[in-house]
Image (cartoon, rainbow, N blue to C red):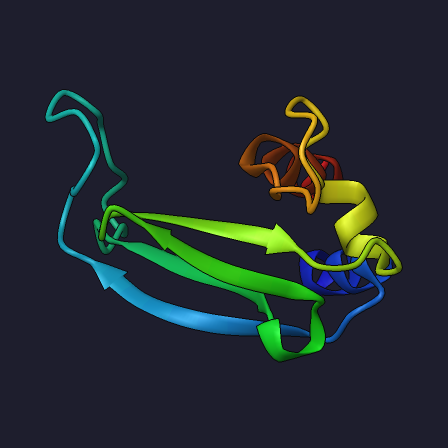
Length: 108
């Protein structure tokens, strides 16, 4: 569980691994992509999550479609790493781009 451990270190929070199940055969892959003889031809995805009850955030729904995570405090390490400073608003929105970069650095 090096990814889970890396995420726990980076965020200073408990991390939960959620099994999202097996995706149907060849889903999301080009039909021309080759697969080995012993391949099950399926993806197995795991999502890592933090318990939102442990984070100083509010969840705001806009137009019944968009969900925004709004930081209510800057005292949390994960908030410091993920806050979106491109918009000069407070409280800060959390950046999906920064979250993606954080995960990319962890899985290197």
